[in-house]
Image (cartoon, rainbow, N blue to C red; front, side, top):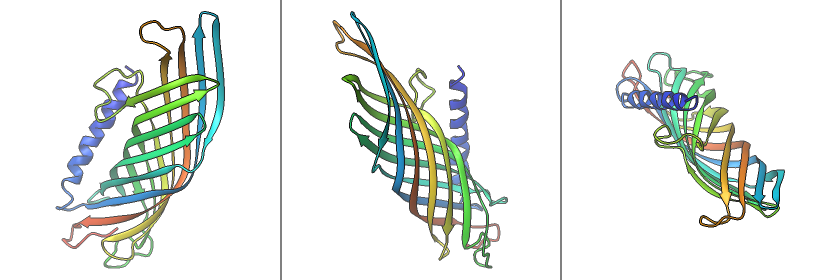
Length: 247
């Protein structure tokens, strides 16, 4: 029950976001970002155990996952009056692997955004340069394969689009934290660089046979990542004066 209520609240927030985004043609400024991860530090803290008639064996390790692949699409809207505050949603893809570990995720993130206007001009009241910060929660579709000292196994876990509709024991979710700098050379176009941190936990049971198991095990993994991403942003919508909004 402690997990279920926050998930419901997060999706209620998403519903409100969609209502706001649907009104961007009236007053608010909207944004659509396309991004690509370039450098990053992914790390998996892995623990595995296996129980056989002869006893229980366990092992643990911290494994670096070099050269991850990441890209995604983020969109949302800024408040029509307090345009330094906004809401957004992020759909992404990430893959990282190393000997014994392979992780593929499809995160869906709900986020709150804050920005500051620098170098304002009459046609860009939100500033040509905009430092920003974002925070929220990510829900994952995760395909995980762990092998350590001959123990482990695979798991496919789904935490969205309706994470509160089924058993919450194996749901995969975690924080979404980002800070970056956007430069807007034209009314509709911006480029940005961003630092992002995410983490999530994956846990699942394993067995060597569904009918006559002789070995049952457990895998618990915590994945943390700190990386730099770059992207391009399309700005749209109108401001309270009826002019084209720019960020």
